[in-house]
Length: 306
Image (tube, rainbow, N blue to C red):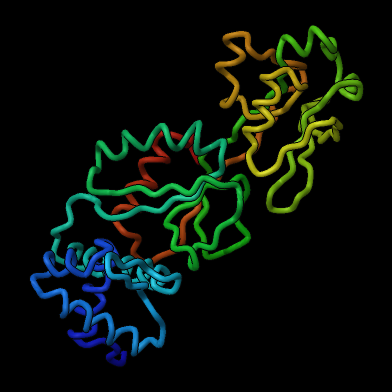
């Protein structure tokens, strides 16, 4: 391996990260024990070497450029990996620490992941958690995520996939809607009802509803005057408001069913499910914070054998 960095270059990267985090050359200088002018000269040399502006400077403040933000994200992660490598080899790291970036879809984030995070940070207060709540696919390498949760297996073979659960689907409507439109007694009767639709953000295609019929799982196309995209919780809000019938995850509406705010329909055809998968990159040495969080999540969400 050829030598790419000398001590001065590594030191400049540390000073750059300090300035980015403090949004101030003076603040970075106070922490590093140098002068603000030294910080400014160091970053000026970096910008000249890289050929890009890292900061926008005004008389009152500094802020990262777009290129500076991308460079900071990767430098921060690289420095954290160096720290963790030294702690691991010396046995000094006894508790996970550092930033953890997670991407999760809207329903799973709100009803499964986010409620668990306070417990995780009580156990591991030195880990800071950044959660990206969205249904779009992410680029692990490009966007620097540690973990993602998705509703399907990955096509990327570089990712490890662990099933968290098979989330049960349920058909529901509000009492007000059923009073107005009647209660469907069969799957065929859904044709005469307002069936609220959801379009997949990744493809724009409408999600068919899934039912058990004669021991088999079948997909049924439905129609209606309401369609939501991006946020699947929107279809549940419409159903609660009396707009029509919706198929969604039981964990979202189980309290509504118990309280009577929503009514479960056609239970004889229920019990179908969709998986939620925990994804993280293959790595020879995962950071301690990622390993710890994976174990934490699997212990609380995944059933036996998952």
